[in-house]
Image (tube, rainbow, N blue to C red; front, side, top):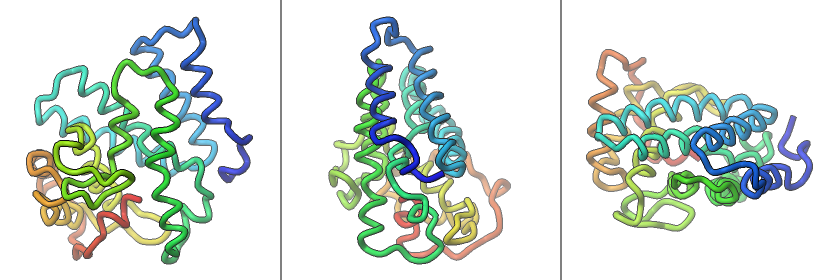
Length: 231
């Protein structure tokens, strides 16, 4: 099934219903149920993305705990990570899963998912900053990210954590356009970007958690591979 098989506006309509139904009070239980419903919808379109989001959510939560975030911030981080790519429902699968190099237009289209994810999630009355965390998960400390080109402290810590977890999991997973680059290469990449694009404390926490004993086959890190791997 492609994203165009869903009725136009199906995902935003679902979110609007969740956020405006007077019988649905903004409780944590209902927020989790809203996330589960979005994931169920996403599974109808693309099996890979929800699996990837689950792996990212697990790693992000571990990093957050390593950094001693409060329980409320951990909950927000975990919820956000579970649906951080929900905006990809708007992108045709033949582009998402294209085996060859993306054209500039296709690359730009995939980058719209960060804004779309925010637009979808901001329709739900979360008591936690789920939409805001997701909005900035492709932003970098040096301002080279997207969609807003945020710098430094403009980026929430939870978003910085999500960025690192996304890079590590994306690079260590098989994709239609490439085989896994391996965990060792993923960790080398976040080391390379530490202090420029990525938060040093977050990188250090991730490296501490992902010890050499859990690394896969060594692979050569590629210039720019983090951005291309985590579109």
